[in-house]
Length: 418
Image (cartoon, rainbow, N blue to C red; front, side, top):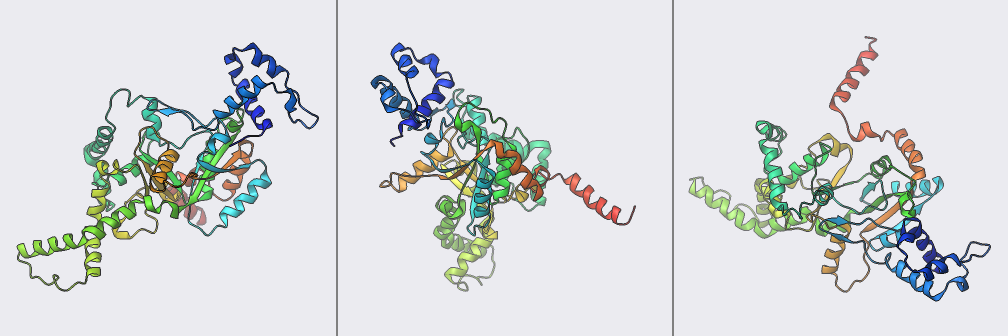
Protein backbone atom coordinates (compact mmCIF):
# COMPACT_ATOMS: atom_id res chain seq x y z
CA UNK A 1 0.00 0.00 0.00
CA UNK A 2 1.57 3.29 -1.15
CA UNK A 3 0.41 6.31 0.84
CA UNK A 4 0.35 9.83 -0.48
CA UNK A 5 2.99 12.17 0.88
CA UNK A 6 0.42 14.25 2.79
CA UNK A 7 -0.83 11.12 4.58
CA UNK A 8 2.73 10.17 5.45
CA UNK A 9 3.26 13.61 6.94
CA UNK A 10 0.02 13.29 8.91
CA UNK A 11 1.20 9.99 10.40
CA UNK A 12 4.56 11.55 11.22
CA UNK A 13 2.79 14.43 12.98
CA UNK A 14 0.83 11.97 15.14
CA UNK A 15 4.05 10.16 15.97
CA UNK A 16 5.84 13.38 16.97
CA UNK A 17 2.89 14.62 19.07
CA UNK A 18 2.79 11.35 21.00
CA UNK A 19 6.35 11.46 22.31
CA UNK A 20 8.09 10.36 19.15
CA UNK A 21 10.15 13.51 18.89
CA UNK A 22 12.03 12.47 22.03
CA UNK A 23 13.09 9.24 20.31
CA UNK A 24 14.66 10.97 17.30
CA UNK A 25 18.39 11.20 17.96
CA UNK A 26 19.39 12.49 14.54
CA UNK A 27 19.91 16.29 14.31
CA UNK A 28 19.67 15.90 10.51
CA UNK A 29 16.13 14.44 10.72
CA UNK A 30 15.02 17.07 13.24
CA UNK A 31 16.39 19.84 11.02
CA UNK A 32 14.67 18.31 7.98
CA UNK A 33 11.34 18.22 9.82
CA UNK A 34 11.65 21.90 10.67
CA UNK A 35 12.12 22.74 6.97
CA UNK A 36 8.90 21.07 5.74
CA UNK A 37 6.69 23.59 3.94
CA UNK A 38 3.04 23.64 2.89
CA UNK A 39 1.22 25.46 0.11
CA UNK A 40 -1.85 27.70 0.57
CA UNK A 41 -4.17 24.66 0.41
CA UNK A 42 -2.31 22.94 3.25
CA UNK A 43 -0.64 20.43 0.96
CA UNK A 44 2.96 19.53 1.66
CA UNK A 45 5.47 20.88 -0.87
CA UNK A 46 7.40 17.78 -2.07
CA UNK A 47 10.58 19.78 -2.74
CA UNK A 48 10.77 20.66 0.96
CA UNK A 49 11.20 16.98 1.91
CA UNK A 50 14.88 16.05 2.12
CA UNK A 51 16.06 12.55 1.12
CA UNK A 52 16.83 11.59 4.74
CA UNK A 53 13.37 12.73 5.87
CA UNK A 54 11.74 10.89 2.96
CA UNK A 55 13.45 7.68 4.13
CA UNK A 56 12.32 8.35 7.71
CA UNK A 57 8.75 8.90 6.48
CA UNK A 58 8.79 5.52 4.72
CA UNK A 59 10.07 3.84 7.88
CA UNK A 60 7.38 5.43 10.06
CA UNK A 61 4.67 4.64 7.51
CA UNK A 62 5.77 1.00 7.39
CA UNK A 63 4.87 0.60 11.09
CA UNK A 64 1.24 1.31 10.09
CA UNK A 65 1.27 -1.28 7.32
CA UNK A 66 2.07 -4.26 9.54
CA UNK A 67 -0.28 -5.73 12.13
CA UNK A 68 0.00 -4.62 15.75
CA UNK A 69 2.43 -6.46 18.00
CA UNK A 70 1.10 -9.11 20.37
CA UNK A 71 2.48 -11.92 22.51
CA UNK A 72 1.42 -13.82 25.62
CA UNK A 73 1.93 -10.80 27.88
CA UNK A 74 0.88 -7.85 25.75
CA UNK A 75 -1.47 -6.91 22.90
CA UNK A 76 -1.00 -3.59 21.13
CA UNK A 77 -3.98 -1.50 20.03
CA UNK A 78 -4.37 -0.26 16.47
CA UNK A 79 -2.33 2.92 16.07
CA UNK A 80 -4.20 4.17 12.99
CA UNK A 81 -7.08 3.38 10.66
CA UNK A 82 -4.48 2.39 8.07
CA UNK A 83 -3.20 -0.35 10.35
CA UNK A 84 -6.74 -1.39 11.23
CA UNK A 85 -7.53 -1.78 7.52
CA UNK A 86 -5.41 -4.96 7.53
CA UNK A 87 -8.43 -6.69 9.08
CA UNK A 88 -11.50 -4.52 8.46
CA UNK A 89 -13.23 -2.73 5.62
CA UNK A 90 -13.92 0.66 7.22
CA UNK A 91 -15.98 3.80 6.86
CA UNK A 92 -15.78 6.97 8.96
CA UNK A 93 -18.83 8.78 10.33
CA UNK A 94 -18.13 12.44 11.07
CA UNK A 95 -21.51 14.19 11.05
CA UNK A 96 -25.12 13.61 12.10
CA UNK A 97 -26.21 13.38 8.48
CA UNK A 98 -23.50 10.77 7.79
CA UNK A 99 -24.75 8.78 10.76
CA UNK A 100 -28.43 9.09 9.80
CA UNK A 101 -27.69 7.83 6.31
CA UNK A 102 -25.83 4.69 7.32
CA UNK A 103 -28.30 4.06 10.16
CA UNK A 104 -31.24 4.00 7.76
CA UNK A 105 -29.34 1.70 5.39
CA UNK A 106 -28.54 -0.89 8.04
CA UNK A 107 -31.88 -0.75 9.84
CA UNK A 108 -33.63 -1.38 6.52
CA UNK A 109 -31.41 -4.37 5.66
CA UNK A 110 -33.25 -7.67 5.20
CA UNK A 111 -30.11 -9.73 5.79
CA UNK A 112 -29.34 -11.52 9.06
CA UNK A 113 -26.54 -9.34 10.40
CA UNK A 114 -24.39 -9.63 13.53
CA UNK A 115 -23.19 -6.44 15.23
CA UNK A 116 -20.72 -5.56 17.98
CA UNK A 117 -20.15 -2.11 19.47
CA UNK A 118 -16.88 -1.09 21.15
CA UNK A 119 -16.18 2.26 22.85
CA UNK A 120 -12.70 2.61 21.32
CA UNK A 121 -11.96 2.23 17.62
CA UNK A 122 -8.34 1.37 18.46
CA UNK A 123 -9.18 -1.78 20.47
CA UNK A 124 -8.64 -5.23 19.03
CA UNK A 125 -11.46 -7.75 19.48
CA UNK A 126 -10.50 -9.67 22.62
CA UNK A 127 -12.72 -11.63 24.98
CA UNK A 128 -12.97 -10.53 28.60
CA UNK A 129 -10.92 -13.50 29.78
CA UNK A 130 -8.17 -12.73 27.25
CA UNK A 131 -7.74 -9.20 28.66
CA UNK A 132 -7.84 -10.65 32.19
CA UNK A 133 -5.33 -13.38 31.32
CA UNK A 134 -2.90 -10.95 29.68
CA UNK A 135 -3.19 -8.33 32.45
CA UNK A 136 -2.66 -10.94 35.15
CA UNK A 137 0.12 -12.75 33.26
CA UNK A 138 -1.64 -16.12 33.29
CA UNK A 139 0.68 -17.72 30.73
CA UNK A 140 3.77 -16.13 32.29
CA UNK A 141 2.83 -17.68 35.63
CA UNK A 142 2.49 -21.10 33.99
CA UNK A 143 -1.23 -21.48 34.75
CA UNK A 144 -2.93 -24.06 32.53
CA UNK A 145 -5.82 -22.31 30.74
CA UNK A 146 -7.87 -25.50 30.37
CA UNK A 147 -7.50 -26.33 34.06
CA UNK A 148 -8.49 -22.78 35.00
CA UNK A 149 -11.66 -22.92 32.89
CA UNK A 150 -12.51 -26.41 34.15
CA UNK A 151 -12.16 -25.18 37.73
CA UNK A 152 -14.38 -22.19 36.92
CA UNK A 153 -17.14 -24.48 35.62
CA UNK A 154 -16.80 -26.93 38.52
CA UNK A 155 -17.06 -24.04 40.98
CA UNK A 156 -20.25 -22.89 39.27
CA UNK A 157 -21.77 -26.34 39.80
CA UNK A 158 -20.67 -26.61 43.44
CA UNK A 159 -21.23 -23.01 44.56
CA UNK A 160 -23.83 -22.44 47.33
CA UNK A 161 -24.51 -26.15 47.61
CA UNK A 162 -25.28 -26.45 43.91
CA UNK A 163 -27.82 -23.63 43.90
CA UNK A 164 -27.20 -22.75 40.24
CA UNK A 165 -27.41 -26.39 39.19
CA UNK A 166 -30.85 -26.56 40.80
CA UNK A 167 -31.79 -23.37 38.95
CA UNK A 168 -30.63 -24.84 35.61
CA UNK A 169 -32.54 -28.07 36.28
CA UNK A 170 -35.73 -26.13 37.00
CA UNK A 171 -35.25 -24.22 33.74
CA UNK A 172 -34.78 -27.46 31.81
CA UNK A 173 -31.13 -26.63 31.06
CA UNK A 174 -28.60 -29.48 31.29
CA UNK A 175 -26.00 -28.42 33.86
CA UNK A 176 -23.50 -30.62 31.99
CA UNK A 177 -23.60 -28.06 29.15
CA UNK A 178 -20.50 -25.93 29.65
CA UNK A 179 -21.56 -23.43 26.98
CA UNK A 180 -24.80 -22.69 28.86
CA UNK A 181 -22.79 -22.04 32.03
CA UNK A 182 -20.34 -19.77 30.19
CA UNK A 183 -23.29 -17.81 28.77
CA UNK A 184 -24.63 -17.29 32.30
CA UNK A 185 -21.21 -16.17 33.57
CA UNK A 186 -20.78 -13.85 30.56
CA UNK A 187 -23.88 -11.87 31.48
CA UNK A 188 -23.80 -11.76 35.27
CA UNK A 189 -21.11 -10.12 37.37
CA UNK A 190 -18.71 -7.37 36.30
CA UNK A 191 -15.75 -9.49 37.34
CA UNK A 192 -16.82 -12.67 35.57
CA UNK A 193 -14.70 -13.47 32.48
CA UNK A 194 -15.18 -16.01 29.69
CA UNK A 195 -13.73 -16.85 26.23
CA UNK A 196 -16.92 -15.52 24.60
CA UNK A 197 -17.33 -12.21 22.78
CA UNK A 198 -20.83 -10.72 22.66
CA UNK A 199 -22.54 -10.00 19.34
CA UNK A 200 -26.14 -8.98 18.70
CA UNK A 201 -28.69 -9.15 15.90
CA UNK A 202 -29.68 -5.57 16.75
CA UNK A 203 -27.88 -2.56 15.29
CA UNK A 204 -29.51 -0.39 17.97
CA UNK A 205 -28.14 -2.55 20.77
CA UNK A 206 -24.61 -2.52 19.31
CA UNK A 207 -24.78 1.27 18.98
CA UNK A 208 -25.76 1.56 22.63
CA UNK A 209 -22.90 -0.68 23.79
CA UNK A 210 -20.42 1.31 21.71
CA UNK A 211 -21.63 4.84 22.48
CA UNK A 212 -22.29 4.23 26.19
CA UNK A 213 -18.74 2.92 26.63
CA UNK A 214 -17.08 6.04 25.19
CA UNK A 215 -14.82 7.58 27.83
CA UNK A 216 -12.62 10.22 26.24
CA UNK A 217 -12.73 12.04 22.90
CA UNK A 218 -9.51 13.99 23.45
CA UNK A 219 -6.88 11.45 22.37
CA UNK A 220 -3.87 12.65 20.43
CA UNK A 221 -4.15 10.00 17.71
CA UNK A 222 -6.84 10.31 15.06
CA UNK A 223 -8.15 6.83 15.88
CA UNK A 224 -8.61 7.87 19.54
CA UNK A 225 -11.48 10.14 18.49
CA UNK A 226 -13.78 7.33 17.34
CA UNK A 227 -15.78 4.37 18.60
CA UNK A 228 -16.64 1.43 16.39
CA UNK A 229 -19.47 -0.82 15.27
CA UNK A 230 -18.44 -4.10 13.63
CA UNK A 231 -20.89 -6.03 11.49
CA UNK A 232 -21.19 -8.82 8.94
CA UNK A 233 -23.83 -11.16 7.58
CA UNK A 234 -24.38 -14.20 9.79
CA UNK A 235 -24.04 -16.59 6.84
CA UNK A 236 -20.29 -15.93 6.69
CA UNK A 237 -19.87 -17.67 10.05
CA UNK A 238 -21.88 -20.77 9.21
CA UNK A 239 -18.78 -22.87 8.51
CA UNK A 240 -17.54 -22.06 12.03
CA UNK A 241 -20.90 -22.57 13.73
CA UNK A 242 -21.39 -24.97 16.61
CA UNK A 243 -24.68 -26.02 15.01
CA UNK A 244 -22.87 -27.28 11.93
CA UNK A 245 -20.51 -29.35 14.10
CA UNK A 246 -23.40 -30.89 16.04
CA UNK A 247 -25.35 -31.72 12.89
CA UNK A 248 -22.28 -33.25 11.22
CA UNK A 249 -21.74 -35.41 14.30
CA UNK A 250 -25.36 -36.58 14.13
CA UNK A 251 -25.08 -37.29 10.39
CA UNK A 252 -21.98 -39.39 11.04
CA UNK A 253 -23.14 -41.28 14.12
CA UNK A 254 -26.94 -41.55 14.09
CA UNK A 255 -27.04 -45.05 12.55
CA UNK A 256 -24.71 -46.49 15.16
CA UNK A 257 -26.53 -44.63 17.95
CA UNK A 258 -29.87 -45.94 16.70
CA UNK A 259 -28.64 -49.54 16.54
CA UNK A 260 -27.17 -49.24 20.02
CA UNK A 261 -30.53 -48.01 21.30
CA UNK A 262 -32.36 -50.93 19.67
CA UNK A 263 -29.84 -53.35 21.22
CA UNK A 264 -30.36 -51.77 24.65
CA UNK A 265 -34.09 -52.27 24.27
CA UNK A 266 -33.58 -55.93 23.35
CA UNK A 267 -31.24 -56.43 26.31
CA UNK A 268 -33.93 -54.97 28.55
CA UNK A 269 -36.51 -57.37 27.12
CA UNK A 270 -38.49 -54.64 25.37
CA UNK A 271 -40.29 -55.86 22.26
CA UNK A 272 -38.42 -54.83 19.11
CA UNK A 273 -41.04 -52.67 17.45
CA UNK A 274 -38.71 -49.91 16.23
CA UNK A 275 -35.95 -51.88 14.54
CA UNK A 276 -37.55 -52.22 11.13
CA UNK A 277 -40.18 -49.55 11.49
CA UNK A 278 -38.23 -46.32 10.87
CA UNK A 279 -36.58 -45.19 7.66
CA UNK A 280 -33.06 -43.76 7.69
CA UNK A 281 -34.45 -40.24 7.83
CA UNK A 282 -36.79 -41.09 10.66
CA UNK A 283 -33.99 -42.84 12.55
CA UNK A 284 -31.93 -39.67 12.31
CA UNK A 285 -34.82 -37.54 13.56
CA UNK A 286 -35.46 -40.00 16.39
CA UNK A 287 -31.82 -39.89 17.55
CA UNK A 288 -31.81 -36.10 17.34
CA UNK A 289 -34.87 -36.01 19.57
CA UNK A 290 -33.69 -38.73 21.94
CA UNK A 291 -29.97 -37.90 22.12
CA UNK A 292 -29.79 -34.27 20.94
CA UNK A 293 -29.34 -32.62 24.34
CA UNK A 294 -26.83 -35.25 25.42
CA UNK A 295 -24.82 -34.70 22.23
CA UNK A 296 -24.89 -30.91 22.65
CA UNK A 297 -23.59 -31.23 26.22
CA UNK A 298 -20.84 -33.58 25.05
CA UNK A 299 -19.68 -31.25 22.28
CA UNK A 300 -20.04 -28.22 24.58
CA UNK A 301 -17.62 -29.76 27.07
CA UNK A 302 -14.79 -27.31 27.74
CA UNK A 303 -12.13 -29.81 26.67
CA UNK A 304 -13.87 -30.27 23.34
CA UNK A 305 -14.52 -26.54 22.89
CA UNK A 306 -10.83 -25.75 23.31
CA UNK A 307 -10.08 -27.87 20.25
CA UNK A 308 -11.75 -25.21 18.09
CA UNK A 309 -9.93 -21.88 17.53
CA UNK A 310 -13.19 -20.10 16.71
CA UNK A 311 -16.88 -21.03 17.04
CA UNK A 312 -20.12 -19.24 16.38
CA UNK A 313 -22.83 -19.99 18.95
CA UNK A 314 -26.47 -19.02 18.48
CA UNK A 315 -29.85 -20.43 19.47
CA UNK A 316 -31.56 -18.25 16.86
CA UNK A 317 -33.36 -20.41 14.29
CA UNK A 318 -31.61 -23.50 15.68
CA UNK A 319 -33.43 -26.83 15.81
CA UNK A 320 -35.01 -26.86 19.30
CA UNK A 321 -33.66 -30.37 19.87
CA UNK A 322 -30.06 -29.13 19.66
CA UNK A 323 -30.20 -25.72 21.31
CA UNK A 324 -27.26 -24.63 23.46
CA UNK A 325 -29.36 -22.96 26.18
CA UNK A 326 -27.41 -19.69 25.96
CA UNK A 327 -30.64 -17.71 26.39
CA UNK A 328 -30.76 -18.52 30.09
CA UNK A 329 -31.05 -14.94 31.35
CA UNK A 330 -33.04 -11.80 30.51
CA UNK A 331 -29.92 -9.85 29.55
CA UNK A 332 -29.12 -11.97 26.52
CA UNK A 333 -32.80 -12.12 25.51
CA UNK A 334 -33.28 -8.34 25.48
CA UNK A 335 -29.86 -7.83 23.96
CA UNK A 336 -30.71 -10.30 21.15
CA UNK A 337 -27.35 -11.76 21.95
CA UNK A 338 -25.18 -14.39 20.38
CA UNK A 339 -21.54 -15.36 20.89
CA UNK A 340 -18.28 -15.99 19.11
CA UNK A 341 -15.91 -18.30 20.96
CA UNK A 342 -12.14 -17.69 20.86
CA UNK A 343 -10.04 -20.42 22.49
CA UNK A 344 -6.77 -18.44 22.49
CA UNK A 345 -5.48 -16.70 25.60
CA UNK A 346 -4.04 -13.77 23.67
CA UNK A 347 -4.71 -13.78 19.89
CA UNK A 348 -7.44 -11.29 18.84
CA UNK A 349 -10.55 -12.67 17.17
CA UNK A 350 -9.91 -10.92 13.85
CA UNK A 351 -6.48 -12.59 13.55
CA UNK A 352 -7.82 -16.02 14.52
CA UNK A 353 -10.54 -15.67 11.87
CA UNK A 354 -8.07 -14.52 9.21
CA UNK A 355 -5.62 -17.36 9.93
CA UNK A 356 -8.43 -19.94 9.74
CA UNK A 357 -9.70 -18.41 6.49
CA UNK A 358 -6.25 -18.59 4.87
CA UNK A 359 -5.92 -22.24 5.92
CA UNK A 360 -9.03 -23.04 3.89
CA UNK A 361 -8.29 -20.53 1.11
CA UNK A 362 -4.49 -20.47 0.64
CA UNK A 363 -4.83 -18.88 -2.79
CA UNK A 364 -6.48 -15.76 -1.35
CA UNK A 365 -4.39 -12.76 -0.29
CA UNK A 366 -7.04 -10.29 0.91
CA UNK A 367 -9.27 -10.92 3.90
CA UNK A 368 -11.49 -8.64 5.99
CA UNK A 369 -12.99 -10.01 9.19
CA UNK A 370 -15.93 -7.62 9.00
CA UNK A 371 -17.24 -4.23 8.01
CA UNK A 372 -16.44 -1.52 10.55
CA UNK A 373 -18.12 1.83 11.08
CA UNK A 374 -15.89 4.26 12.97
CA UNK A 375 -18.13 6.92 14.53
CA UNK A 376 -16.72 10.18 15.85
CA UNK A 377 -17.09 10.39 19.63
CA UNK A 378 -18.60 13.87 19.34
CA UNK A 379 -21.74 12.08 18.07
CA UNK A 380 -22.07 9.97 21.21
CA UNK A 381 -24.83 12.06 22.83
CA UNK A 382 -26.73 12.32 19.54
CA UNK A 383 -26.65 8.54 19.17
CA UNK A 384 -27.64 7.82 22.78
CA UNK A 385 -30.57 10.27 22.66
CA UNK A 386 -31.87 8.71 19.46
CA UNK A 387 -31.64 5.25 21.03
CA UNK A 388 -33.27 6.35 24.29
CA UNK A 389 -36.19 7.80 22.32
CA UNK A 390 -36.64 4.29 20.90
CA UNK A 391 -36.48 2.73 24.37
CA UNK A 392 -32.99 1.32 23.94
CA UNK A 393 -31.15 2.18 27.14
CA UNK A 394 -29.46 0.60 30.16
CA UNK A 395 -32.73 -0.41 31.81
CA UNK A 396 -33.86 -2.25 28.68
CA UNK A 397 -30.58 -4.02 27.96
CA UNK A 398 -29.86 -4.89 31.60
CA UNK A 399 -33.34 -5.55 33.00
CA UNK A 400 -33.86 -5.68 36.76
CA UNK A 401 -36.55 -8.19 37.78
CA UNK A 402 -37.54 -6.14 40.83
CA UNK A 403 -38.05 -3.02 38.70
CA UNK A 404 -40.09 -4.97 36.15
CA UNK A 405 -42.37 -6.43 38.82
CA UNK A 406 -42.78 -3.07 40.58
CA UNK A 407 -43.59 -1.28 37.33
CA UNK A 408 -46.23 -3.86 36.38
CA UNK A 409 -47.95 -3.54 39.75
CA UNK A 410 -47.73 0.28 39.72
CA UNK A 411 -49.39 0.47 36.29
CA UNK A 412 -52.41 -1.48 37.52
CA UNK A 413 -52.44 0.30 40.92
CA UNK A 414 -52.49 3.73 39.26
CA UNK A 415 -55.17 2.58 36.82
CA UNK A 416 -57.51 2.03 39.73
CA UNK A 417 -56.41 5.14 41.64
CA UNK A 418 -55.01 3.13 44.55
